Image (tube, rainbow, N blue to C red; front, side):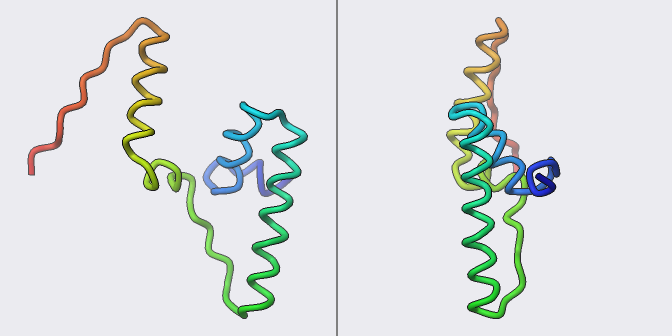
Length: 87
């Protein structure tokens, strides 16, 4: 429960994303499964645990994040225009 209560961790974000689609209990079991796998790798490989971060899903697929923001804004009756930042 502590792993999912932290809003700035990968597991917390993973839980909230999955709970929205599959429900809280299934999402909790999925987080526990991820924890077991991470613990096994830490013990087997003798390397410290590295949290992927709360923005892992955004960094992994930024175009998907933009589509999700557009869809959410459109459902609120807003329009958004994405312009690249001049370098």
